[in-house]
Length: 378
Image 1 (cartoon, rainbow, N blue to C red):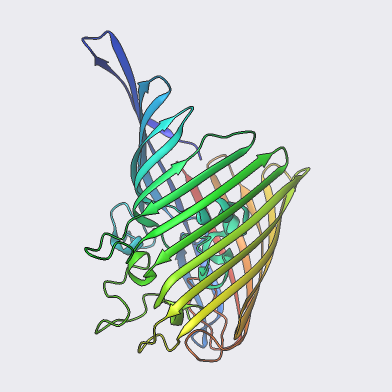
Image 2 (tube, rainbow, N blue to C red; image 1 turned 90 degrees about the vertical axis):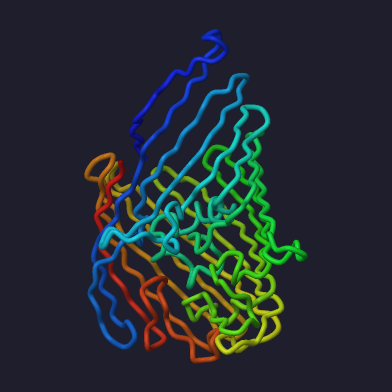
């Protein structure tokens, strides 16, 4: 993404004897288009769609050189809907990211605030969601490869690269008086890049996910609680006491193309029965994905992926395919077709229906969508 610098200031310190260079960069991404869905709650539909390939956003990113290879850094990133101008991420002003930290050339980087977890950053980077975001993610995004949630109040550490290997870890205390672990989140990640090979591992462990990451104001069991998840794929499991996610992925570049393999396992443990979550015990999803992309020309990229997801009572299959054409370094057009098929019984106890992420569920086991969008970076 091309960045536009709006300020470069030299600040005098210690009577001008030493100087710290400070910079702030304004950047953004606009994505808007049209989508056709063959079955949306029983009816075909054509609608304008925002940010379903990449979320529309604007942000500020800054750094200050403190000397000795140490920098102060920050990022503030807003998400919005281009079709109506509304804020996304629950109406937050900087709902995508909001953090400050210190970065050292030799010791790594520590950041504090609202941030992405390693599952999104590392496994999502290799998965099909990196090409098509919501429309290419696994059903319901139960494994958070496309950032269904960010983590609030998080402290994250990322190590320097060592022979192609880089580790990361995140911890967010629950902040509940007398119950330290109530909303606690921790995550670990490991990335390896060497030549044409990229590989990654990630693990998330989330306590009381309804409140800690899914934005419910009530915990399961409290009067008035309703599952904060909208997708039937896992909404009936959102009252779990613990949500664990494991991911492994690898990609290999071959000439002008690449092939990627992704595996994820998501476990909802100690599910509490409520009016909107009719389950108890545990539930587990296993997902297997293969994807590929190929640059036919420097401007034309074609991508495809297949995902198979299995829960004990339901299974989902999804195919994504489409080209992307760059009109310039900052502007491109994108076309994607998505086919999804469901079978079995979903998390709400009903016959499983197709539910391509963010498009609303079908009234049948199969759903097809075709989306065209225009994207611009600044």
